[in-house]
Length: 401
Ligand code: F0G
Image (cartoon, rainbow, N blue to C red; front, side, top):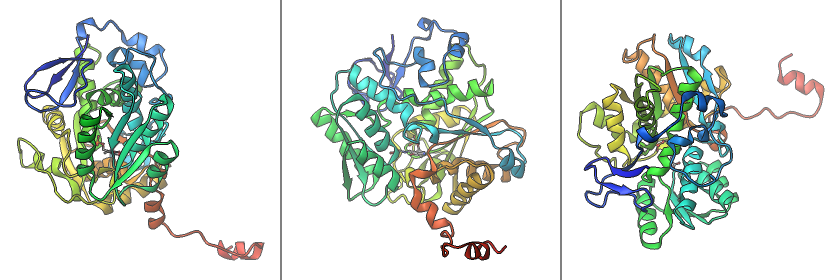
């Protein structure tokens, strides 16, 4: 049986307690399995479709899950961009291909299922956009109400549209994401809504399957896993999952966990660079990649361990580098991602140039969200369509033929 364990003091709690922090020391909790009890083989997994639920023995859900067939996302070989960077083994796992267009669906299929399993009847989150979209989708599927708090004016339009149409109660606060998270946390504690931000240890259980799938798709462990970092939940989740695979004897090495942040909101990068014991929050985070516009990442404690224990790295990229890579992925690889997602590949480019990444490495970049999440940022970068009269000479003239 699994239980909840504090990552700081090791205090353990039953798996069915509604807890987001350790009661004794206030630090983060993680789901701990007794790996000796997990009777599954790689062969059994391989027979199931590639999806979050292929790995159900390593997930906490014991009821029929609330699912929309999340996971099973493509792993693309970036041959053209790889060649430009001198990398033969550069891959992108396109999490934008999930039901709501981001990796959050992996967390929410598990998180909303756990809400039902734990007899919680309403759910809530704060979000830079994708978490709210995903929560709205899975709450709709489960038939329970959802409340989402967004930083006013700082959420990409596609994400707001999703939260609205799927029926969440959408509240915009005049404050940033970090404040929205504090508020929703208080709301959940005082009014009994189930909090589905990434401090919820069950949500991260779903997200760890990104790593499982990548290992299965590659036929082995990559040398390096590169993820955009905002609240630092995803990089922590992937690391935790791979540790469990190692514990089960399914893999025999861990990848160098590498986190990429936007320069204007990069407290994890700073903590790694300056070897700080914990992150110093950035009070005014700013970046075009609004998904990762986060100054006080709540999972930093876990992420620092993931990066340090695997000999990984953290790097920041400028908004220009992010947008350039968004265009490069779109035009040279046919992969449409939102700005935050392009950060991982932009980070690889930078780290190859600075010599941190060895050109022989096999690298998996997680590209986290779909291009259509943020059409405004796309339109701003592109020439508008050429409008012409509806006749052939005008067309030929526009095409200079
Ligand atoms: N990429 C995208 C597209 C995201 O939406 C997020 C986080 C991240 C990367 C970073 O992941 O927080 O686990 O380090 N989005 C959250 C949200 C904060 O509210 O949608 P992280």
